[in-house]
Image (tube, rainbow, N blue to C red; front, side):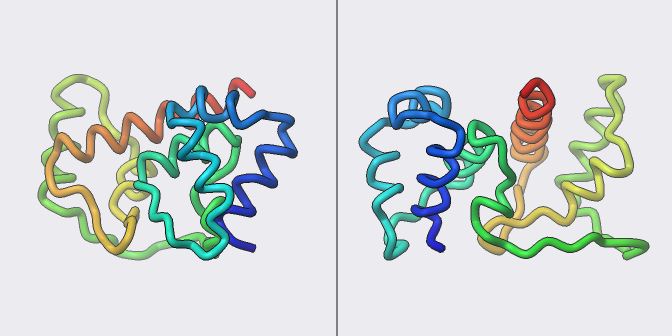
Length: 138
């Protein structure tokens, strides 16, 4: 099943119209329509768009992208310097990252890459925290 089919199927399961989902995900109705009809996978939505869609569809990026998932246990994970800087920033603000948060951020990759600055890590962290909070309200 293509990304287009997964988006449309999940939207319909939730009883959302194109208008409702595009408004909630803050993308244009036209772009959402194009994504849902892109069965050949020619459209390459940004990570931000995919995360907003996954959030509003009450699913995960892995499910939306049909990626396999595995649990990682007792693995040594390298912390990039920019993530360490973000970790120190959060500790200084008296909102330290949990070990799980740090691990989850450190192993996160999108299209083979990771954030390069502490500010980018902060934006990613806020997106994830906000999507989790929205998911718990549903």
